[in-house]
Amino acid sequence: MGYVGKLIRGVLLTGNGGIRRFNSSQAAAAVTAKMPAFDYTPPPYSGPSSAEILKKRKEFLSPSMFTFYNHPLNVVDGRMQYLYDDKGRRYLDAFGGIATVCCGHCHPDVVAAIVNQMQHLQHSTILYLNPAIADFAEALASKLPGDLKVVFFTNSGTEANELALMMARLYTGCQDIISLRNAYHGNAAGTMGTTAQCNWKFNVTQTGVHHAMNPDPYRGLFGVDGKMYAKDVQDIIQFGTSGHVAGFICEAIQGVGGIIELAPGYLSSVYDIVKQAGGLFIADEVQAGFARTGSHFWGFESHGVVPDIVTMAKGIGNGIPLGAVVTTPEIASVLTRRSYLNTFGGNPVCTSAGHAVLKVIEKERLQENARVVGTHLKKRLATLMDKYDLIGDVRGRGLMLGVELVTDREKKTPAKAEILHVMDQMKELGVLVGKGGFYGNVFRITPALCFTKEDADFLVDVMDYVMGKM
Image (cartoon, rainbow, N blue to C red):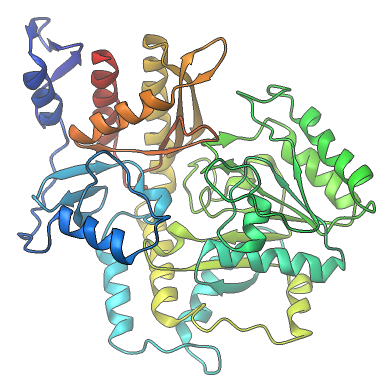
């Protein structure tokens, strides 16, 4: 498995109590040597170089597209929690779980389900019968509480949230929607309207959308007092609307916003307030759902509430474009007033992939793994917070963790330049992490659910080494 010992500031503390000093290149090599063993070698790559790809991107793709790192990776292969570049080098992917994969890159069971279906039928299932969509809908509904059992399939989280907002407005006959200021719900006009003040999104103004104070325990005005934040929702309804709302949409843990867990007691208080105003509660589980938090299958379950509508995407298809909205029969019936269609939503290839993901989560006990490994990883990250003043906060649940960097703990000054440096150096040592938060100063650690304790230790050792050099 590589070196046995702990590397701190260029010094390797060996298992027998000895001390071995390294120069920078030797220390980096020692950290890299500790990456857990993995039995896979990617085939040789013969495609275009990174420079050629970058040139084409600049000429033919949207100028709004961006990449991580000073020297962007040319990723050409992936297996489980690892990615491989065009040189065949392996990287521990501690971010891809939130972006696409749930079970791991190219999980054999999911790949087999996709290939098998592709060999038989790729057709839309709107006007004909096919077992794939019905079987997956049944399996998905069985994972949700109460009367949440009617499923609408989409192609993305944006589509899912757009549909949920429309259903809430149709069902209640009201146009007012409340979301949080630090939320992220998608890329279309309606979802960008609810996304609000996220630092890198357009602040698209949409009639009837109201943004409530963010219940952020770290930076928020009321700390961990969820009921005080909830009062802002009450005030919006009382003074900013007719007294009625169509719905309230919320992530259980804010992903793009910086892995922010809502202040305790907030969601249950808001749930009661919104219900009294005739509104629906929409749970955005695009990032926190599908066993990621470890303690529960869905993020909202840890708050003791049952939503009226649940949206999901990303990990649901393990990299396949797939999203879903699940609601009650009564709410779902509003779409029968007209004809609602989604050409590719619920196509047999994507739903076969989604069904395979659910089976893998159960078979490999990935929810329990997220709890055990996530708890271990969070504890180890907390030890770094004790060691480095650069770390202002460690938070999250399961395998959805955030590390906020600050240059001043008292003032909570965002460490914008420092996070880029640490992120880039970690990549050089073989670890890939994400970045987010309103100020762009929060590490988003969201690996595939097959992440191991050995992977967690390697990640923390690399972060420790990089921060130690600073």
